[in-house]
Length: 284
Ligand SMILES: [Zn+2]
Image 1: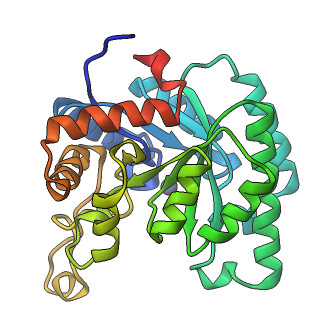
Image 2 (image 1 turned 120 degrees about the vertical axis):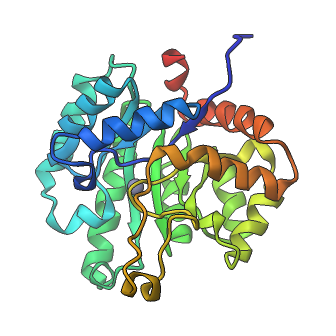
Image 3 (image 1 turned 60 degrees about the vertical axis):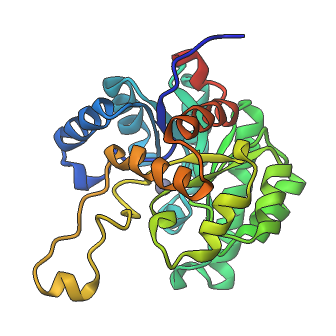
């Protein structure tokens, strides 16, 4: 069996986001801070055709990994031809060890503009087309799940893939089990750090240890210690910027909830990330 030194892996962060500066200078600085805290690898998912090249270049620059896909929030603006461009990019970079998944793809039934019957259908069409591409290119998928777990699962039953990660998972025990049965790991991040998130925190404890991966989803979903409420913002407290440097502390929270050591959580979540995204292994 291969020996390795356990590291924290941020399985989902948008380091190419505008919040990190047009030249990615803030992303580079945040990544260095994260590395100093033991974050050995980040996975940067694309959200639209326009950033396929950006996430690939950034992952290479940072020594990280990336995924290519069209995010459900980007589906209204996306063209059918973007799916062909995705297929072409997946083919062109098939030998790039840093390309580890198709993502971020999925369904979002939270944003009202995405919930009309036409938009639900359009989301489903893009999701299914991208599941087919994942199958064609033998890659796992990174799923965006927001009020959509059951419908995502229905399509997965028809188009099973090699698993992957249900990112920012926040569903029921049964839905969690269904994703696990399809070979998925469940991504836990900032949301689990909030005490009122009782159901999610219960799930983080009751799931088998090999079900969990960790993520920051930076710059979104800040953990509790960075979050400023509307009232606090009104008094001038700024919202903290969520970066991969928060990952070890998030891992520590999950470990604490489960009554285990942070080291053990680091080790387990590292192994789980490798299982979910097998190409990470080649990066060491
Ligand atoms: Zn995301």
